[in-house]
Length: 556
RNA sequence: AGCCCCUUGGUGUAAUGGUAACACUACGGAUUUUGAUUCCGUCUUUCCAGGUUCGAGUCCUGGGGGGGCUGCCA
Image (cartoon, rainbow, N blue to C red):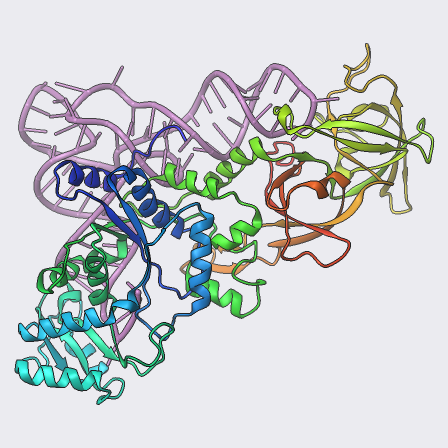
């Protein structure tokens, strides 16, 4: 929260426009197409646009949430709702400024008529294939359409006919009349309108012709008096046409398009098409599967919104197409959760520890801090009994160097409780350790180890009698990205079959007290969030691992 | 191939033409009733070649490398 973002040429432009008086009030917009769920990559655009509005709120700045729904074939209302929920979750407000590009259909139409009247647009009745062929290519200039020189009257009549349904799909389009030889292919008489006899989620059957993005977008921005239209790099090449539309249409404002680079993460694929495939083919439980790189998936995974915002703040805004290490985001998650997550004990791979000098059927109340550094988070009582579960790898028959936990004859502290001394262990026929025996040292709760006792570690534990069973889900990366050198050219992405591991674990009962929206830290195992969505009615609690702890022992 | 954009450690970013720095990662060390946290430290950087300049990461020219554009998608 301390330092402001530095890498931000866009904020510099805006500050200059404000200072020079070019714009007394800044208006930005976040314009998703409702054809899928928002993902981590969208966070950058959201934080940028809404962030700028927040920072300039004193001068009346605002950010619009606008659904760019000009293509009736790909858009659904379900997505509108999820997008609103995700933007809110990130902590941003659009207030009254919720818009739909489809509400301006009449305006785009008027602008198109205006262009026609000025000889800047014409109805082309060539087929899509013909238009494609005559557009030329990267090195060959395009050739004019035979319909390019129609009269204004003829074009007006034809365009009216398009609106009236007099053309079938593909029979006619409206094109801007610019330059068929332009080195920028976007300028080679781009299509403005096409016939689409489709039902639109917002306007129903009212229209049978729909504007293209390149034509509609600048008009949407201008209509809303957007001052700075911030978009990603792939639209850079479209900017000359954006400006052409603004210059040649009767618009109430002159927005400026500025491009910035997308947010990409290592090991993370955010193509909407691929994510949609995962959902449709059932590889994941839905768009909000905790493994998904969607914002709703992140939410269920327990990733705090503030971590995503801080990540965006720190990675900044540039025009450089880079890939941010996902570890950067994981750091922000841990950094935040470390301060707010209550601590609880859990055992994922249980091994029975029998405390020989604690009578069976008897238990002892032990008070544990909910947080090592924050007394305000209070304490809880955990019951200790003769038999407790400990993590199997907290015991080694033959301890390695630098292993400080349990082994024959060694001491270890049961976290928050007594120091115990290992007195023996049992194995089954296969040589697997089935039980560890120990004795506790009275008087060691809250006290240092007695003279002569070496106790360098504290392990977590759950009373076998009092603990509850819960399902915990450990996640690995969803995709495996194979090295291009290994494959025959190009990266290959495959779904990681080990991306989800479900474990029956023992957890302390106080875990169930944790607020469902909160993360808690399982001592030494990482941060977990209770999953309400997947929880079966009845017995079990389900926890999703948000992110693991940094664990130098585990890495060895 | 033509046009446009970009190029600073492993990663993301800083640096009025004036000592190349911050964060993450990795690796060490100290502290620790979480092998966490905290603290300290180490490794590694201006794509190349010319030019302008007292002085270039920054300006100029050329080259290399990366990305984008040939939808009636957005």
